[in-house]
Every structure is written in structure tokens, then in C-alpha cells.
Image 1 (cartoon, rainbow, N blue to C red):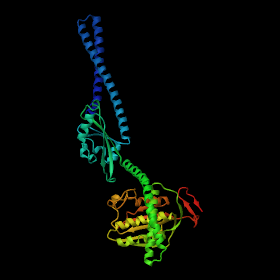
Image 2: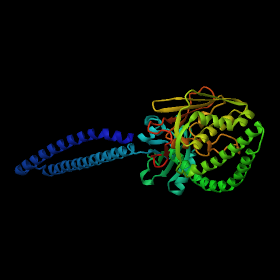
Image 3: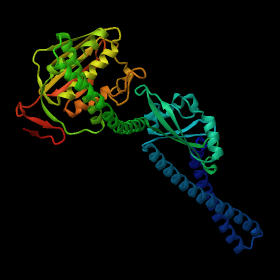
Length: 450
């Protein structure tokens, strides 16, 4: 490129020299023609010499004109080449993917705007530098990749970890292609073109699709599980109900009632697992949130005592929400189970029910455990994601909670600003005045019925 620039700077000087040569040659040729005419009329003896000199001047003039036209054609070709290079560079710079050229030593010869944006390195800082010296090529054996591309004479694709400051779990896809020998004859020219693309979002989408496929399989599996478990659960429930009719002591009667409620809860959880993959229409009624929390804590009373966990409920209003009672039981049941698992050495769980933004009811479930590590907070609501050891969790608890909240028109968020423990914020829509007691709501149709 520098040699071409030097040649371009010499062209005006050469053009000026040619103009001077053409003018002088033309003048000398005219003088020779006048001398030849004069010598022919006077019969001079130097006529042969004048003809020889004129022919020489004519040849010089023709050569100068030939060089002139050749030079002009070359300038037109260079202008056309520069326009073509400018067009190609504009196209490369406006490409949506990062594109850069490498020479035979792996040094960067071209670097487009998308590459600057993707890697965060300006063009001036990478030109002429080996790609291996830059952290963006971490994990890529560039010499081997170039050798394989030359040997196979085809494009090679690599997928590597890409961890910029704002994306610690990123992935990048590189396609290395060898250029034909005719286009990279010079050592300074590019010998390989590399196209880079951030595929982090694509991989995350593929993972979610994979999780969805697993979920569909779980739906089919849950149908079989429900069929197998409903029979023994029905027997347990029938036996407990028969015991409730017997004259028992106060403690024994409470235990029997707890068995009945826990068995019914198990049956409803199995149905909830079915509905997780295949939601069904469920009627909704006005449900007091405080009653739901009290009932869930009562059902888990013995588990909480064994774990050394206390639950404090702060609720002055006991507000009502329009929802499915059993599904709301599952919401608080799953949150309390997670809190108990996190508080392995005991602790306290605080549940606060109050007003949020206009038209909203907010429930905050907080514990004083170790909390959730920052690197896992974006995944806790995904199906099958769990930080528990193998056999202690399925990874469905929080995903079921998120699904139920979504179907109830609300949302669940993890409060990352909590100084200690895990803090979940549940937001419910406040029921309108038109939805009074005795009215229900159908999930799928979105219409209230009497």
C-alpha cells in the first residue's frame, strides 16, 4: 500500500516532465522542418543530417505521447481501483458481522466497524499486530487453524468462549477462510478472511428450546406418574378420612387432619406438574392471601420445626386476589421449601403482605440465609435449573411459581439489593370492583362467570 502511494505521488512529476518533453520535441521538430524546407530550396549539403535529426525528434515526440496516453490510462485504472476499494471497504464496514483479514503470519491487515464493536478494539490498535497477541483469540490455535485451512482449501468454523466484561458467559463463532493465491500473492496482502459472530443469544435460545423439549417429555412422564401415584394417595386419603371419624385425642386428631391435607396437597402438586407442561382451564375466585400463607405454614409446621426455621407473617389487611387457591398454595409452598433448604442451620423467614403500586398487591418472602450467588440469578426461574445437590431438587419449584404468577397476571422478581439472604417480591394485580364474591375467572377465555 505504501509503495502504491509513493508511485501515486511521482505521477504528477512524470506528467510535468512529459509535457515539457512534448513541447520541446514539437518545437525542435518544427524548426527541423523549416530547416529542411530552406535547405531543399537553397540546395544545401546538410539535408541528410536535417532529415535524420527531424526523424529523431519525431520519434521522441511519438514516444512522449505514447507514455502520456499510457500514463493517463494507468491513472484511470488506479482511480477505478480506488473507487472499487472504497466501495468494498464501505460494504465490509457496513456488514452486520465482524470481518477482518489476516496475512500468512496471522497479522491483522483489515478490521471492519463490526469487529471494533464486537471486540471493543479500534482498527488503528490492531492493524499489523498478530491476532494471537489479543485476548479475543483466547482458546484458538491460529497457526494450526491456518494450516488446516490451507491443507483442506475450505472454510473452517470454530466456536469459542467469548467473555467481555458485560457478558461473562458469552460464545463467539469464527469462520476462517483461505483466500485464493491470486488475491494474496503479496506478503502484505490478506491471506485469510475471518468472519466472527456473537452467538451467545442463539445458544441461550437453543438451551431454552432444549428445556422446552424436556418439559414436553416431563408432561408425558407426569401423566404416567400421576396415574401410578393417585391410587396409593387415594388409599392413604381414604384411610385418614376413616380415622378422622374415630374418637381420637386432640393431638391425634390434628395429626390425622394434617395427613389428609398433606395427601390432598400431594395430589394437587401432581396435577400441577401436569398443568405445567399442558395448562388447563381453571376457575378462579377471590382468595385471601393471608389465609393461604397461614394454611401453607400449618401444613409445613413439622418440617419447619425439624429444620429450626421460624416464619413471621406481617399482614394487617389480608387482601384478596383473584386466583386459584390450590395454585397459590403451590406458590408459597415452593418458596418455603426453598427457604428451608437454604437455612440448613435454622433461621427465619419473613413474609410481608402489603400495598404496591396503584392497583397492585405485593408479597415479599425473605430469609436470612446465604442468598443466591450473582452468577445464578438470571437462571433461577428456568425449568430444571437448581443449585441443590443431586437428588435434593428437580429445578421445577421456582419455574412453577413463575408460571403460576404469570397466569395470574402477576410477576415474581428476585431482589438483588437485599443485603442478606434471598428476597423474592411477588406482585399480584388487585381485583377490580366488578369481581365481587361469588364470581370466578376463567384462565383461557379471560371472562368472568357467575
